[in-house]
Image (cartoon, rainbow, N blue to C red; front, side):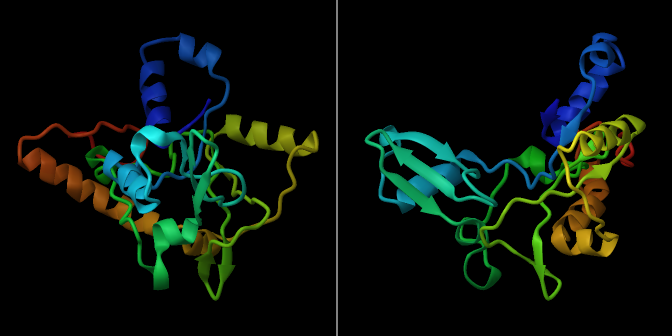
Length: 211
C-alpha cells in the first residue's frame, strides 16, 4: 500500500480490529505530505491560465518529471504548466498560491509517516544548505521505520531495483525543515481543539497524546 500518512494511519487503526489488514497488506509506504490543497487553489490556478473549469480534462499537481510541473490540460489538448517553484514557492521564496490546505491537514500530527514501514520523501537537491527545485533525475530518501520495511528495502537493493547512498539527518532536516515546525506544533493544535470542545485526531504511534 502506497498512500498519504493519514491513509496509512487509518489502515493501521483498522488493523487493530480487522485481521485481514495484516494478511492482505504486506508493506505500507508513504511520501512526506505537505497537506492537500483546498479546491479554491485548483480553481485559482485554472483562472491564472485564463481557462474555464469546464474546459479542463486534466489537472495534475506533479508528474512528468521531478519535481515535475503543475499541469493543466484542456479538452482540445492544450497544456499549461507552472514549475514547482513558480507554483508553490514564487519569487524569492514566496508562495504564489499560499498552499492553502484543508483544515484537517493543518492539525495533522503525522505528515511524515511515522507508522509506515518506509517513508520515501523527495531527496531534494541542496544548494548552500537549502533545497532547490530545478528539474533533475528523481531522487527519493528511504527512511525505514519497521523490520518489514528493512526487509523490503534490502530485498529491493539485492534485486537491483534500488541504488542507495547515505544521507545525514542534518541533510534531511535541510530538505524538509518545514515538517519539524508542523510536528512540534501538532500537540498544541490538538490541545487547543480539546479546550474548545472540538473533535480531535487520534493518531496512536505518532508520539501524540490521544485526547
